[in-house]
Length: 129
Image 1 (cartoon, rainbow, N blue to C red):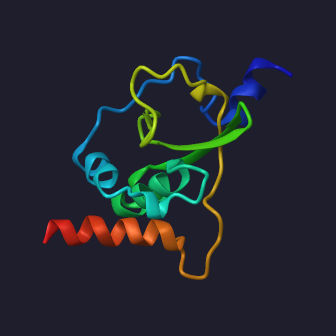
Image 2 (tube, rainbow, N blue to C red; image 1 turned 90 degrees about the vertical axis):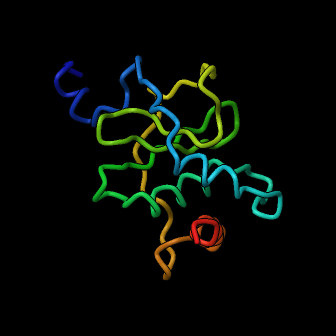
């Protein structure tokens, strides 16, 4: 496969030097409301990313969900408009291979958001009042 073809197919996700976006207020708000009742045994990566995505404006805000199955577990994060990683679970010292992730949509639900992510959104909004 030619280099130009490879870069088009990966849509910029495979950059080996993916940088982490600085922690922002919304990230801290989402992390503050994650409780054990929201964990179904898969961890918080998917549901936290989905909630942040909806609270921050989704695709209109330049966000893209990204997923990678790594060491037998699925991990989700977001890319911002500048291509930086927004990971709501792993810390900045993580050696996670973000460059191997693939853009994926969140799963379809009739409500447009999963119940667990909606719970996070509601908790964040309630704390703002």
